[in-house]
Length: 70
Image (cartoon, rainbow, N blue to C red; front, side):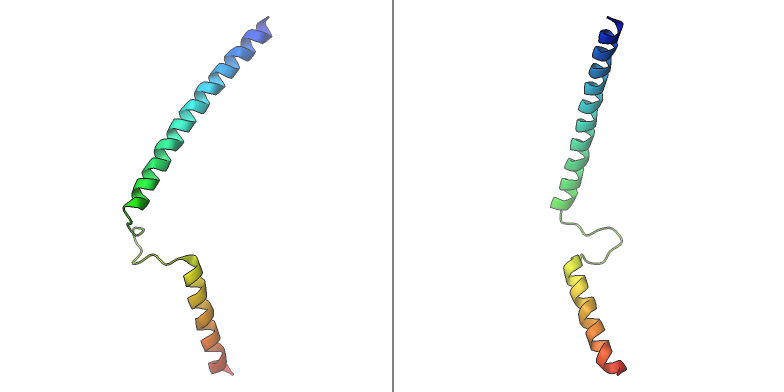
């Protein structure tokens, strides 16, 4: 009987923790979404450059440097 009560209390505490965690993450994601909707660049960066574009420019730069070295 004690095990059943402890199990019920444990599950109740776990469900409360999960509810608080969901609320915390929801608030956190809402804040991030609001920040992204404002379309602000990341603080400290001059302009957002996607990783793909940055990789392409690096690749082009490397290709231009190779003929100069030979």
